[in-house]
Length: 477
Image (cartoon, rainbow, N blue to C red; front, side, top):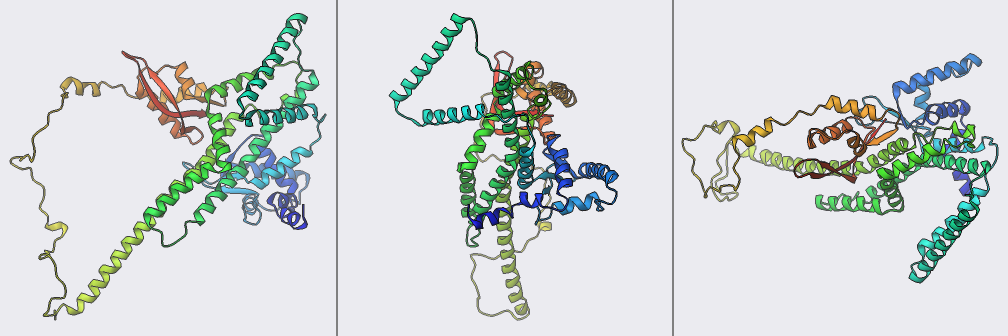
């Protein structure tokens, strides 16, 4: 690492946070508020109340310290030169929210790494390196014969293990040290994954900004702007960061994998030899819901490109309209001096006499005495009868309040639950209308996930049963 590189890295927001005047107070507050509670975003009113309580605790021990108000501290932490917190507005929320920046995430993660641990796991890390290299070689070799040989070797190895267990009657298990080492590694990986999302979001914004800068040519037409924005969306998805994130998001939304994770976690935490200190870390309990919330924020950053597209098109349309108004004003200004002394010669030619008109010159609508058909009347194959119309009146009303209650009860003890799981517990009594009601309930709360990236099928019982394809819906606590 060269001198200039080190010099630039020392200007990183994470380093600035560690060197800040009140870094101990700031880092302690951020860790308690966000990391200890596994929160992603906090409204301003809650943030000020939490900081006020935290400052009172510190002032009891050091009365003369920290003279600023909570609002002043929060404002200074969000300043452009610092960037310890990000203040923004979210949809359906009237007050601003606060989030950790990638620099704050890095600083907190580094402090976690400095914390003393009972032991440093080495065996599991070395084994993960070996397994990782083997997996890379296995999945990058396109030679059919080599792949078949590898699979046969794997089958023989598994058969050897099966025979050994049957002969000895003993199934090898992890020792307590091996168990706790691997569980600690899982906790560390989960912590790193949640911390990296700030950087993932920053990378998406950087890529989108680079693409937007390439479209600042003032000579672009509306069609070219649309084309470039669509190309930009495709480029963002095809970037390395985009491919990795969307692969992660598809895996995260898979209901089967979520259920496997919950079942595996419930089984692991009940193991007798697991260290109580590791069990006290609850990061895995809310991992799915926290990852969904983090992923949704990244998706929102991506979806802002569509909003920007509409804004660009609206701006271009307004410019065209203003240009037309300018031309009309120029014509009016040139015509007014000639109003009392019009030229004898024809200044311009038209195909006919232009009659002036206004809105008030149009007559009110009146029902015609007869209707003249310009073409033959086409009769549909199926006629709508009175009984058909009665079916619309007989449609059951969607009891949204009851659906909300079911969702709350289903989330009791769960961090998140999919619509598919709710429908298994409560089969829809009112058909597809009830399913649409659940989607309405999901859209009411921004914490829930409703995405077209993944879809699910819903079968409504009947004669015959009907299958519908709907967006993937996940309710989060």
